[in-house]
Picture 1 (cartoon, rainbow, N blue to C red):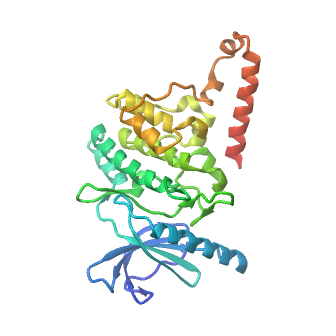
Picture 2 (picture 1 turned 90 degrees about the vertical axis):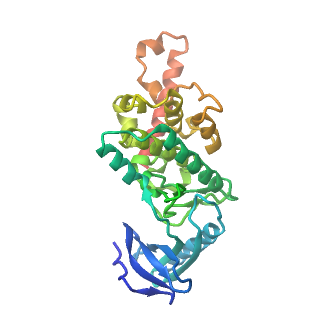
Picture 3 (picture 1 turned 30 degrees about the vertical axis):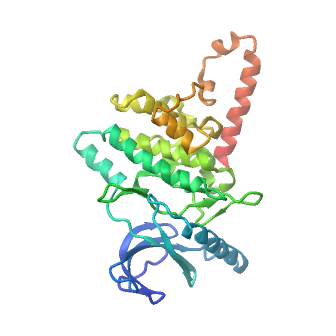
Length: 329
């Protein structure tokens, strides 16, 4: 882990470090004062590249950082923090964003659980609507932007009640016709990460990866506990508890939308965040479909009793093998 900056240190003659507000394997997030704009606080996202990289690869990683940081700086949405600056010092790159005050949703979950209660569904759906707005904005960019690390701790609610999707550490720009590029290599947080994102290979991820994490986040918010990891669900599907098994007060419509979003195979999920939004808020019914992974659990006698039972078993075997190979990559 990189050595963190010291409190009081000034970067670029402008950003005075006030303290650390987050840490990761490739750097820290700092609260800083903008000395050029009196009273303005900002968040500095630090990325230190692997020191073992060759000079050519290091330069490629740095060019990639600046390319994507410039795209993020053009974003302007009320549910996203504004990126105002980006620069490099030595082996470290920095992304300067608005500092978002308020509690993150993980903290609110913990406080609610300690009281022996669940968060109100209507309140959670209000946050979900704002998160959907933010993701729709990201996914509608040209090229689309995938956040890849949606989770309760990356969602903050300001004192005014505005939800903000923070931490662009794993953002991926879907550049058509070329290898996808990522500001910070990583896998996201396992509890909210879909199978195709395991292993850090970004070539298999798209907007449906964010949709899975969106569903997993709603699961956590409404049940006070995170869902089982996608890998665990694949290997032990019988152990997965649906939201209403934990919190029976959740509406059936909401549960169906969450489970649709959390389908293990990307092709079984909503195609867009707006499609999920319509299902979540009752503007369209959740498609009745059998999850292709769950099909493998059906008793052999039920499958073999059909004329096409053998063909179905072959199809299921191919599907299972595909998912397993994705897991092991």
